Image (tube, rainbow, N blue to C red):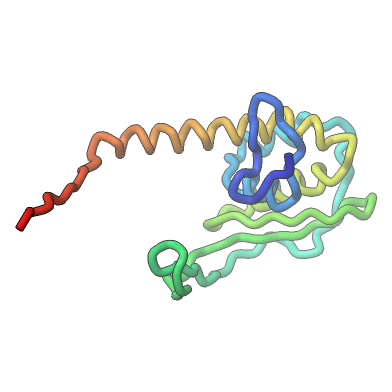
Length: 160
């Protein structure tokens, strides 16, 4: 079952390797410790050189009217990005919200490792599955917290 960026890990119980957009979406929301665990799970991590060292800038965030209508510019947000090349030629990219250069560098490292077949399964079954479970639990908790304040509206029809 192919995954999408909106559903990067369809079944955390039996993790399938997500596509690159899917794993980058998960990695962008990972904590430093989760990223460190992913890197530590891979033996013989190759050295790298920076193609673009971590740098922080602004990007325009767009919204849609009604969630799926016409696009509009909502505002700007801070993003940190970087790109590295391992000595074996694999290029890794990292983008994270905010000013955390260390986290962006870790995302780029894990992205490069995920492109290596010998590390993909280990990272997918370990770190990516854990990140996916944490994000699902956080979303479920948010849903449960907001469900208590839900208001149901109804209208009465008058018979003439």
